[in-house]
Image 1 (spheres, helix red, strand yellow):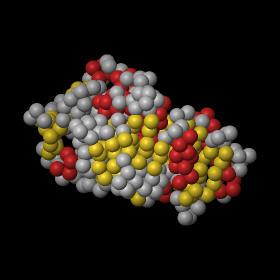
Image 2 (spheres, helix red, strand yellow):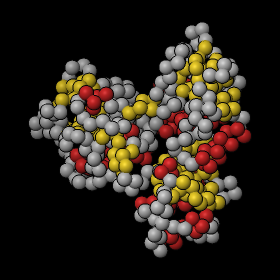
Image 3 (tube, helix red, strand yellow):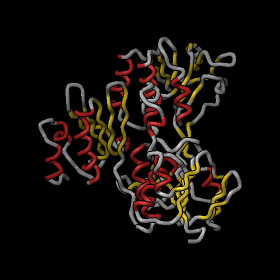
Image 4 (cartoon, one colour):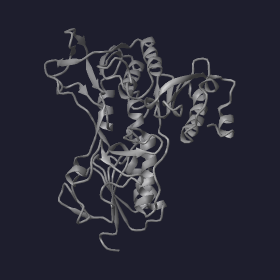
Length: 415
């Protein structure tokens, strides 16, 4: 085996850690190197905004693989290590310490990083973002009874942090620049369900608010919106979205289009380099447009497809997107991409649970959003996911009728 007979994976998140597993399970017997910029072994990120903030688990308890996995599978895990350059022509990746690794095929799974605010005071102590374990532990240290927490951004991260903070006894205000929550993620009706839930729990949720600056002497003690009002706080969590970490790929000359541009097999513009997870954009066959997804399930699905194709398979990524969020005692499950359609049917699935169905202009089901108790929405969202995969055309009235068993629509080959 030559030095070039190696698989190199850059990124120790969900996609990177799962990809090395699939490479071994797929029969690769050569060298595998997994390069992770965090010192800890790869871990699950969804608990960071929930269980970790609540003190119910540690980041280490969310490890993707057990500690012995990398040794037993012969994976060279380089924790706390960064890649400084990729040389496509030479098939090498150069580490920050100057070491050069040759590869047969390379996977870039560098994920995304939180957008930071550029307003005055954004660098004050007590102003946080949430992406990794260190961020979560720092934010958890800010939470406690009577503490005043300002959350900038009413996306999923912001709302999950708000829910966790309230459960820890904090007073919480959420400031969102847009006219409503979750503008690009869910229909307005679903977003309103969540906002109502937060307000019932005492969260002060405000929209159309532009933050102009943070104030404090060395440490933040107030947020000042554009209208000049002052929002006193003990800490701030900024959740205004993320940007794909494409610098390494861009410097290597790979095509970039809202992330690293990949084909249906998750190949980049270099046939021996693949990308997966939050960092890449791809044309989804169901929607016919280039998209980039930032969710756990997509990272898992793309890791498997990319790893198999690195081994010589020819599998296209076509999984229907699926996402979930837990806030208080409520779960949100989303199948497909509701933002690519409009809500035309609402199905009651329990005393306080509903599923909202979105259709495109041609009457094709493109998304389903369930809000409520897991046991009351999960089954219908799962069936909706299959209907979306089939590009089903169904009368909205049938979906809204709780007497209609969704499984019967599958059996009938709904169209």
